[in-house]
Image (tube, rainbow, N blue to C red):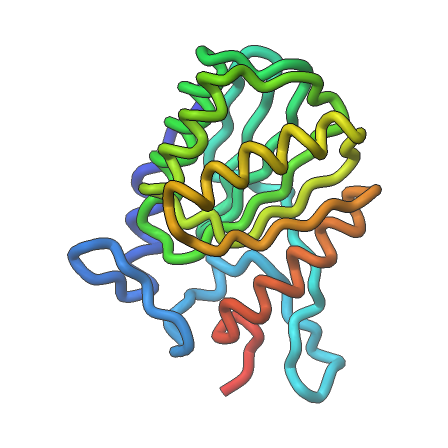
Length: 198
């Protein structure tokens, strides 16, 4: 797993956003540095609204767990490509990666390709649910889900919500383009300071 430089990058983003000693990051003020934006600003729009595009070219850290690949994009986006079944061992690596890189953020967004998902072990579902007590799974956009994959995701996210007591927004899309667009819109709503508005 390649996570070189992830710690210093995360610390830099926290410092730029004025995080407190507990790692909390305030929203609403203009404390997000331009270099840490998840979205681009559309300068042609008079309201300064986000263009609802999620640039995914440069990841801060990457990890592979079994056949599955994850990318962390600072400050609070996880991109996850699921390929095949998720075993207990896979889930330990996956949840560890997520917790390591996002536990300090108040709202974490996920873009998940589940076209290849065919099974999730009971242990993996339990690990995912337990991780929700450390990570703010706020917005999750899934694309490419079969009926079986959608059922597995729904069961897993349901357990996460139950254990954490948080509201996780979940949507399913046919394509990655649609999923990214919605994820971008939700980021604009959650982090208005990144829209360029005063």
